[in-house]
Image 1 (cartoon, helix red, strand yellow):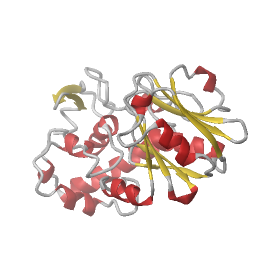
Image 2: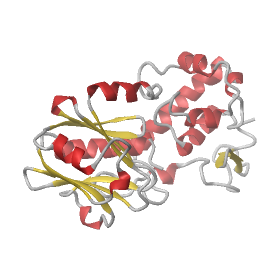
Image 3: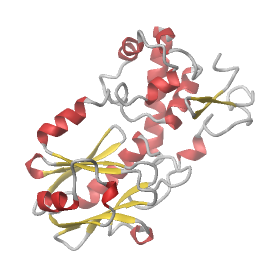
Length: 274
């Protein structure tokens, strides 16, 4: 599932291509990708004639800002792709579920083979509600080691699971949670409330490092993810623990182990992450 680096990469690519475009029409061919309260008719009526002011991100979501305070929140689910029709590999999109047509003849395409993603149109007031449901942004200045330490107090949830809760930290998924915990030398099973201040600083720094480097590498492609140009990401070549069961730790040579926490795999080095 696309996480913060993938959503950020797509948002930057799309912003560069479609900022300033005016919506001429909206066509939804797969209504099941619309969030509750939305309909194809509502999207077409609400967006027609509006200008795209910017394309940004909140958590794992790509957020398209229109004039008048409207925001189209795009959660990519597992296989969602968001791309402009003039991007180099747009012709390879085979499962286009929604198309936002612009007045210059181009379109913004939402492609989703499995259709687990969601398009959710919000006005200023309903966006405020949705935004408040999401936790702190891990690349923001407010996300300090001390803030992370304070947030983990009282929770008995394993840290890997704690990091996946979007109400606490927005944008971190399984890949980057595992990678950050390795950098912090903290085992994924550690209960959140037992994280020390020193470890919280290391974990904050680990999150910042892995998310920033993944953005520089244009995301991680394990299977379906494509960036806003239709290309695969490159960070999968730099993963240190995720998906490396039995392979030697790059730091100490110990074989990487895999465990299952709440039906999802977690990876760690049993020596480096005691």
